Image (cartoon, rainbow, N blue to C red):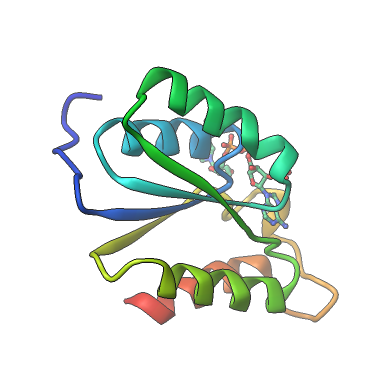
Length: 124
Ligand SMILES: NC(=O)c1ccc[n+]([C@@H]2O[C@H](COP(=O)([O-])OP(=O)(O)OC[C@H]3O[C@@H](n4cnc5c(N)ncnc54)[C@H](OP(=O)(O)O)[C@@H]3O)[C@@H](O)[C@H]2O)c1
């Protein structure tokens, strides 16, 4: 990915970052200097991606942030942690909507797509 500018000083949150498009996005953003939060529901499935980023880019900053899009309290906690994590400019990349299982209606009768929209709404 050559069109991505240097992102030093930027902070990114990537949902669905443990696999697929989110994994590639997190890796590329970290490789271009952003501090990346990988917002995923499983730390065990996310750690290999963090390790992969650390191996490819020893100076990169990447860390797991718990996020279960089917649980609105988890969404709220994730947004708060992200909000208080850094004062620097932030941006969010969602790779869990629509069409993925994360777009299903959740037990608290909200859609996971709405959960992602809520995170967006807090920062945009
Ligand atoms: N791949 C393509 O070519 C393509 C093209 C166009 C559009 N898209 C769309 O882009 C999105 C991502 O595609 P992908 O191929 O990267 O999908 P993927 O490999 O199936 O990844 C989906 C991600 O969403 C996470 N996720 C699912 N439910 C969740 C929940 N309730 N809470 C938190 N995270 C949840 C999964 O985490 P777990 O590992 O924990 O399940 C996983 O990290 C999808 O919406 C897809 O429809 C994909």
